[in-house]
Amino acid sequence: MKKRLLAVLMVVLAVALVFTGCGTPAANSSESAEASAPAAEESSEASTADSPEPAGDAAEDGEFTALVLPKMIGIPIFDAFEAGAVKAMEDYGINVIYTGPTTADAVEQVKILEDYLNKGIDCVVVAPNDPAAFTPVLKKAKEQGVTVVDWDSYAEEGIADLSCRQLNDEEFGKAIWDGLAEAMGEEGEYAIITGGLSAENLNTWIAAGTTYAEEKYPNLKLVTDPVPCDEKQQQAYTKAQELIQAYPDLKGIVGISTPAPIGAAQAVQEKGLQDKIAVVGTVCPNDAKPFLEDGSLDSGYLYDPTGFMNATVYLAWQKALGKEITDQMEIPNTGEKVTVEGSDVTYAPPLKFTKDNVNDYNF
Image (cartoon, rainbow, N blue to C red; front, side):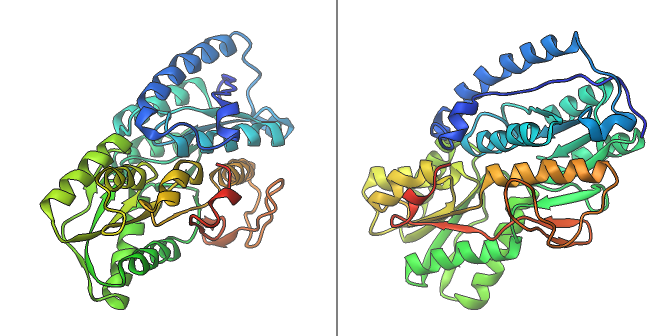
C-alpha cells in the first residue's frame, strides 16, 4: 500500500460529554461545533511535530491511521459516534482521527479528506453528505492505496471497499412507520421532516417506510414531500410549526435524523397538541426523554451509535490489513456479531424508545 508520512491526531473532543449521553440539545449544536473546531486544529499542530514512520508493513503493530469523517460535528448523535471512534483507538491501539465540518456541507467534507490524503492516511471511514460529490476524491483515495469504508450515509455504488450499516435499512423504516401508525390510529394526514434531501441513508429509511405504509396502512396520507431541516433542531422546530399551520388536519410527523423529531416534538409541546399530533422518529434517548415523558414524542428509534462506530473502525482496520470480513464475525469489546452480504456489513437490530423504557438507555 502506498503510504506517506502519517500525521497522528488523537482527537478526544468532549469525551466526558458523550460517555454520559448524547449531549446538549441540538438547538445548541452550532455553539458546540464551533468550540470543537479550534481544539482539532490545536491537536493537529501538536501532532505533526512527532510524525511516526509510515504505516506500511508495521500497520498491524499500531502504526495505522484511520480518518473518520462524519457528516458534521457538534450535534449529539455525532458526539456519540465520536465516543465510539475514541474507544476504538483505545481498544485496538491504532490512530483514529475524528473530524468533520460544523454544518452538513459536502464541499467542506471533501476539502477535509483532500487535506488528509495529502498528509497520509491508511483508510477513510466516511459518511458522505452528498455521495456524488464524493466520488472523485474517493477514487483518488483508492488510487493512493487508501481503503474506503462508508457508514451512516453511503458512497455511490462500487466506490467503497466496505459499507458499514448501523442496521437493516428496510427493517428500520418499517419500525418507524409502525410506530407512526400505532400513534395515529392507522389513519390521517402526516408529514416528514428529514435532515437533508441528499443524505442517502435518510432517503433509504424514508423510502422503506413510505412504501411499507402505502401497503400496510393505506389510510395514512402523506401531505407533502419530505421537508429538510439541515440537521438542526431549531430548523426542525420552525418547519414543524409551518406544517402544523399549513395542514390543519395534520395528525402525525415523522422526524428522520436525530434533531428532527426533537424539534417537531418541541413545536407540538409548545402548542399543547400532544393528543392531536403524533411525533415519531430517530432520536438519542437522553434528548428524547422529556418529550417522551410528556407525550409530545410518542416513540423514538435508533441503534447504539458508540458501539457501532467502534465496530466500524475495527472493520475498516481489518479490511485495510487485507483480512477477510466474514458473516457473524464478532466485534471485540462490543460482543455484537455482524451480518455480511457482499461488501455490506450490518451491525445490530434497531432499538425502540418509549416513556416506559427510555431510562434503560444512556446515550
